Image 1 (tube, rainbow, N blue to C red):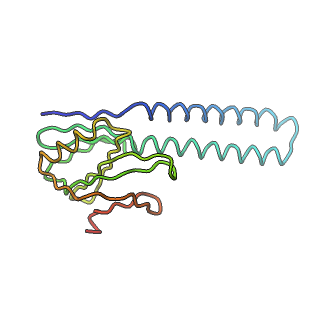
Image 2 (image 1 turned 120 degrees about the vertical axis):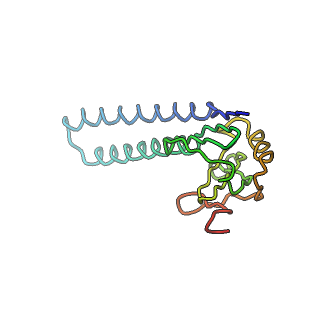
Length: 175
């Protein structure tokens, strides 16, 4: 039994288009700034340009980080699970014995804009991997496979924000 869970491409493609749009805006702004700064120096134009470039850079960083954080590729075979995470640029293998358990959760995008179901897989070494249904195909099939492999269901956990990252309810140091 080999099951592959492919990433969904709709949201990554939309984010990539936004990244390219803002990147082209950034390059166009820098080009105009360089051309116009030598003609007539004005402090307020320079300050406004700097703020615009900073804002566009922040938007590009946010979209790129968001795209790479949730983009995952899963492959399950008889003995374990392979997880490719774009943000780490590596493929990790975990046997089913290495899995502490899994929980269901929801991820909120924006303050109250929309949410998506997710499965958080906890490993014995303290690592957790969140699989979001908007970004990975067939989350219900993944849950069935985890149940068939007798992986412990830890329960539902609400979305708890931390200082920089999400705080998980069933982390190794908390249980």
